[in-house]
Image 1 (tube, rainbow over the protein chains, first blue to last red):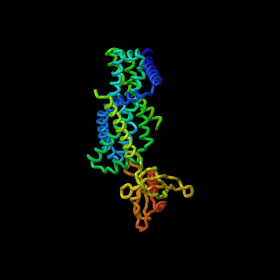
Image 2 (image 1 turned 120 degrees about the horizontal axis):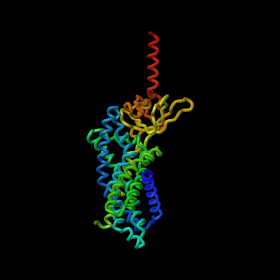
Image 3 (image 1 turned 90 degrees about the horizontal axis):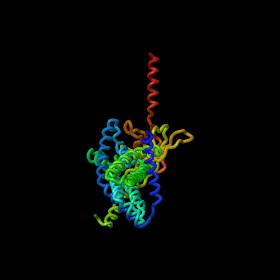
Image 4 (image 1 turned 45 degrees about the vertical axis):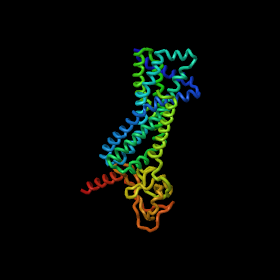
Length: 250
Length: 156
């Protein structure tokens, strides 16, 4: 009984200790910058297709639903405001973080887990190359850079999706669409807070992905389990931390 | 496997794309202000502004022509003094135009509607609009209605 309660706590503690160790081992060299950029490519550029597609359709369906609901109250003009506010504050950061976990987090976990299973990490250690610095650091930083960038792309395509539905399909006035959005979305409070969230989620998603790969059991089942855990843990913790951050920032 | 240079190029391009998205969102989707370019400030006093907020729109005939800058209480007359900016493109508004606080739909934001007057003199920067209609406060309307209903019952 107590074992079941203690296990998650122990896992959280280990993850935090791992992050602190990884932070302590960070070093800035020319090689690290290039390697981080390469990881940004694998985590960010390779996720663009799923982010753009999902963003566009989220924008479409959000506008469709809000128009349908708000016209009942005679407030269809507010649809673009609802679209922009819900995207900037919640949907952009949260959905991007969860999609990122599924697309990039899993591959980071599997990569590091397989490195562990095939003893590549031990080999690096033997060659006096710090695997925390060489393997973990670029992936952590890449997530921190890629997730906010992907959130920006997601928000932009979602708003363009909203414009596509409202202006091209429904024939609404583009001036009033943009106008009511601009009139009620604040740069600092709405957009800025959303970007702060996306930085937090970027750190969270890449940290969990790296941690589960690092601590995976060196077997094929172990790597498979770690990959699953990455997605589950990221989805749950993003949603919990989203609430906490919102409560503090609003 | 692509060469590492191509990968770094692609990553750089990706970050540029994100930067472009940031600029687009910051300029196009947030409160850069309805009045881009120049504008002139006009003020008006209302006995009640209701739920009007700064950055609310100022419109004429349903078209947005400006935005509310600030709302403050006049310490002498106890009226709300609303200052708003109207875009320079609309610099021919008659001096005796009137301003009312209106609501867009039931749930909509409150905004200032300007009705043109007939004076040949245009409004200028720093001018004041004298003819105003305050916001309709629902509680007062309901209160008056209930009071009237009570009074009618007493008459019977």
